[in-house]
Length: 166
Image 1 (cartoon, helix red, strand yellow):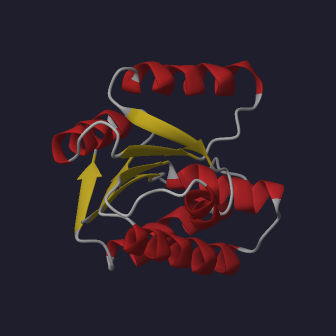
Image 2: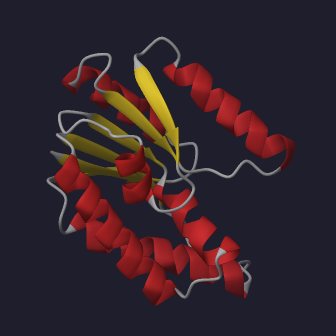
């Protein structure tokens, strides 16, 4: 089963995703695929918040700010695992702002990576953000938000279930 959870930042997506994972899998089968590059104190605080949220829930954490299928293969994740991909939005930002990839390249790569990952594990729960584009956005932020929408739409069409929050 592949589920995409889309919502605004801080809308409860991560809590819902973790609850779903713990409902459908046993400890030892739960993989937390962490994609955030923690910049500064705010980034570190966000990582710590998420670590505390999943504490004691039986997750094995794999850090993968890029190339999620490679990370899963290198970690030799069993095929009966349930993976929580937290969060697709970080992967888009990492590709866009660290690797300076073009939006079309990012969409193709990440969509392909997620489809491959879904084929390697029993369950994949994906957390992703949606942003309301406003006139206040600069060009980079607007490109990022539009790329997120495009990827969410592409993945939504191949997932078993899409949940929208907020």
